[in-house]
Image (cartoon, rainbow, N blue to C red; front, side, top):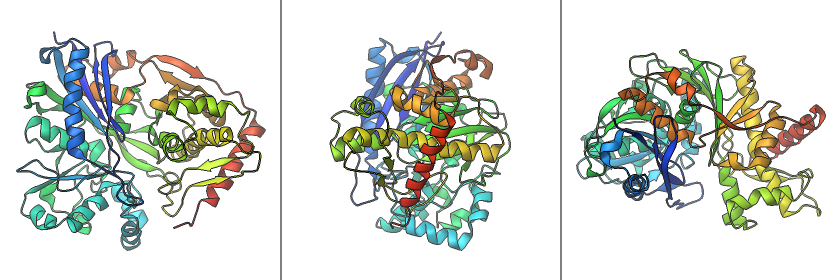
Length: 494
């Protein structure tokens, strides 16, 4: 009996490798950061080969940490930062340009023109998404247009495109070129109704069909690892990171939702087997698909800057030396003293979708201290979540009674309590914080029978901690009013 499922969670700032046992406990886990390459304002890139070498190193080290061998691994699953775009030579395996990260805004003006030409409502009906540089299509278009000879090489069939999941599966398997429905739904190239590449969008972005991977379900045996690091292990799970977190939080029924607090902040609600098209600035996306079963849809609210704001306070402003110092600094003051921090560093995502917005700290006086700014930074994540929460309620007609939370920031108890207060519902933290990696493991394990069904997975979920709301309604309304006033001040800077 093979003991473990291995999961790779390739995120925006780091890559994680984890081993899970049959009880969904973490047996071993390791993480490694990679460089953030910023050649110009608004440009964010990653070195895909650096990340690939990190993956290999982490797999080997994780097996060593667990005193495990390849023979102990039943299957592997992959989850990834989603819209980040890579093009590579299929003969050499070398990227032709750095991976362009989901946060990158170099194509913002192009997408404004694109929406004007194609119509926002028409695009939403086909893709479930607003026209925004966030998604992969305009990044792919930029690479094909700006890298010398890229377009002719693509048309000759010599180049391949993928998000990071596709790149790793191709590298690990020795040439399998696939993605899953959740990642494909974030490219701005997949028809949200047919779950196939949309011919009209390919034409509009001038993307040759042959560069695109095959779209598969999120849980099936795609093939085996050919690389010596895990040779012979089935690759059987693949989900975009936020979809994996939804799956890892066991939100299998319509109306169940989770919020992940990472570099950005992402709330997803399972909406069942039919897409709901948002009237309130949310994305219609895939939740997951198990092979042989109907695809499941979700509504998503994406916030660009959450944990990244804490990093900014550390690296750019220098008011903390380590990220975990922010809670103590924020707790050194009783409240925000009227200070609000809108972290629109690359525009605002859901539910506003304002690429012209930029970061604003509002409401400062001579009394304002580093503690107030730290507190305002933490509260910004909770306010942005509250905006998404309200949009989700309007679109789905579902009032959530609890919110499951995960990601690095859930260890910040001040933030979690404020989140419960501002939403006025209990906030639940699971036993396993690494729900993104767990979701990839669940998908991989289901495909090979390591776990029998969703009901067995659901039995593994338990709450470790909960925060109950304790704020009065008048205070809540006043704080939200101040936040929305600050949001309006961030508009029209670009």
